[in-house]
Amino acid sequence: MQRTQLGLARLVSFCLVTLALAAAPGRSQQGDDFQLWLGTMLSGRFGARDSEAGRYRWWLEAQDRQRDDWEHFALGFVRPALGYDLHPRLTFWAGYAYLANDVALREPFDEHRLWQQLSWNLPVDFLPLHSRSRLEQRFVETGAETGWRYRQLLKAAPALSSNGRLYASLWDEVFVDLNDTRWGQRQGLRQNRAFAGLGLYLGEARSKTLEVGYLNQWIDRRGRDNTVNHGLVVWLTINF
Image (cartoon, rainbow, N blue to C red; front, top):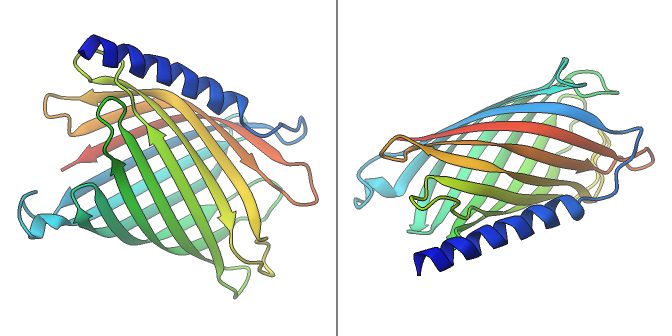
């Protein structure tokens, strides 16, 4: 039975990688860039998992992104949050994010965000699935209006080894702006990210994971050539 499930997981993994790469929106020769994304996420509980205090959780995330073939700083941010387990598979999060932006074709600017999120681990035995639904309120120094944005991510992590330590990491996330602002946000589908890579549980306790892979980021520029960024992503997660 385990061999059947592992074989099915590998087949699904191959199909999802193919779909992620093939379904990415068409690229523009003038808008492409090669980037490096480095990230770390720390998380833990305020008590034992089976206690009431253990239902309360914390999260601290940081990222650094390099653009122009990894030659220039593009974005850095820190994102702390507090969470509460509504169910063993469902967690509500609320947090803050500070971002320093230095994107191409714009002057550097800072952004602050408030955000709320539901994280759900779907009950599928042979193919672990994770859903993340996030609502963001964006505040930028170049304008006084609040930009509302919705993000939806679906991730699959099928095992690629008999002990389960090596797995495929496959996810897609869409970004939908919910309103227009004078500082540049426009209502509608603004971005899609498709990722395909490998993940590895580190250590016997499996409290640390390392994921490395390819990210295809499509951005709608409205009135200009759309951007397609190709990124090498290195992501470390540590659970306490």
